[in-house]
Amino acid sequence: MSNYFIQTYTWNPWHNLAVEKYLSTKIKEGDVILYLWQNERTVVIGRNQNAIRECRAQLLEEEGGCLARRTTGGGAVYHDLGNLCFTFLASPEVYNLEKQLQVIQAACRKFGVETKFSGRNDIITEDGFKFSGNAFSKTSRCSIQHGTLMVNVDVSQLGRYLTPSKDKMKAKGVKSVQSRVCNLKDLNPEVTTDAMRQALKESFEELYGSFEELDTKILDNFQVKETYELYSSWEWKFGKSPECETSYSKRFDWGELEVCLKLNAMHISEIVVFSDMLDVELPGLLEHLLTGKRYDMADVNLDNELPDCTKEQKEKLCEVVKWLSELRD
Image (cartoon, rainbow, N blue to C red; front, side):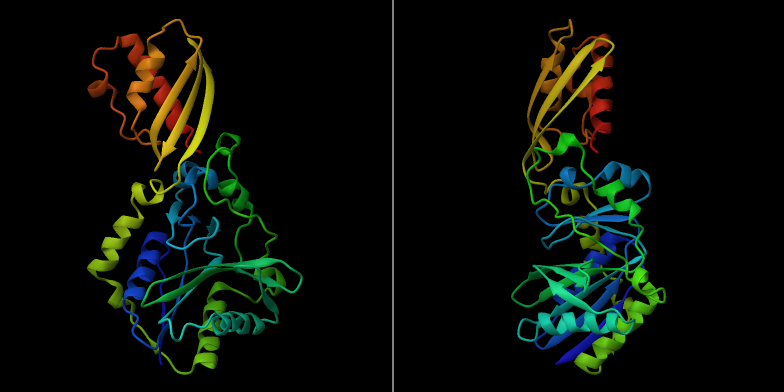
């Protein structure tokens, strides 16, 4: 068996997940890698989750945060620099979930915190508070367990970014399960992310034996950069959301509007507009304009697509598109 350890100090989730993907392609028979990483102000959703159901992505991005979609299942989680992420990557014949969990538990025990594995994917305290969520994936050459460790996360941000609006309740997809959570620092003030990094490193060596620490220079390569471009793209973050239905309504100076959307891969596959406005042509123009477009309205071009509408109609359509683009959260 060949054991390896690597940790990054870049806070970008798309880069960190790209590194994880790269490491998974380098696993050889008998290999085990422990990889530690952190994200700053990030919501990470599961592979099959609906972005608009799970988080206020626009608010998050406006405030300097990132939305990321991982390749594993499970629910939406909030990361900041008070959270430490870990990944175990192993060839299938040496992948051992129980042993990997023991590394986490041994690290926590160094701070006097006793833990247990609960349900499908949680690590909790003896009092039943969750501080770690885990997710899993595998290929023919590599099995992966990755998870979070809430050391000193700003829990006030969880509801700020993760709570969906009422307009999203018809959205389909895997819904996150809310749990009682706690920070490890609340249990022992001496726990910091740096201290936990060191504790995990020591526990890994205690349970797996000696290891080689990999130089992060190996991560400066085309494969990581290419995967980063994919993970940071709108198509990956939003376009993989399952089909869903949503509706919005608003009263404008010129009439009340209700817009019903059916979304597929976060593109508008169907749209129906109801209104009491005097201009009977405008709802049809709006339906024609938005069908097939992205849900965030980024590819809507009034000048090119509706050249024959009047100046007054164009002004109203611009007003509606602006309103809808701001309702993504």
